[in-house]
Image 1 (cartoon, rainbow, N blue to C red):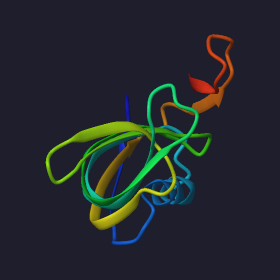
Image 2: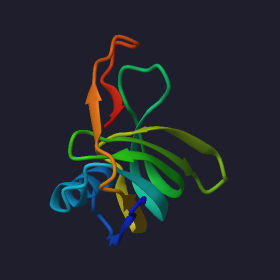
Image 3: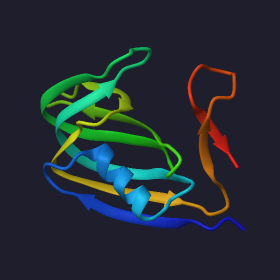
Image 4: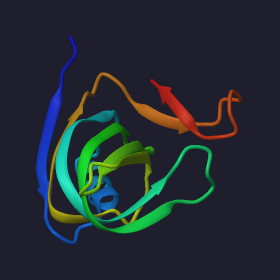
Length: 132
């Protein structure tokens, strides 16, 4: 039987979205988790767009319209979409430097039935998800 363990928390203004998620994953020793939901806002973003070597940054006021991905003490992979005050939406790989504006309400789910690891498997040049 699949056992799900929820972790619900709120980030406050000035906190780094990725670093705080990483902190929770480490504190709770999550071996196989994923983002269930996230609603919030940012003042600064750092997002690596598809097939780009570096992140792109910006400042202002942005709504988090999506946060998705896998989390583990063995490595995480998170994607974010944000929209500006005109509704223009961008998204990509979540990087350090995404700073919370008013809040980030996050629910992570995990299961002890799995363990997520990141290893090179020869299918790409990157460390990819391996489910144990």
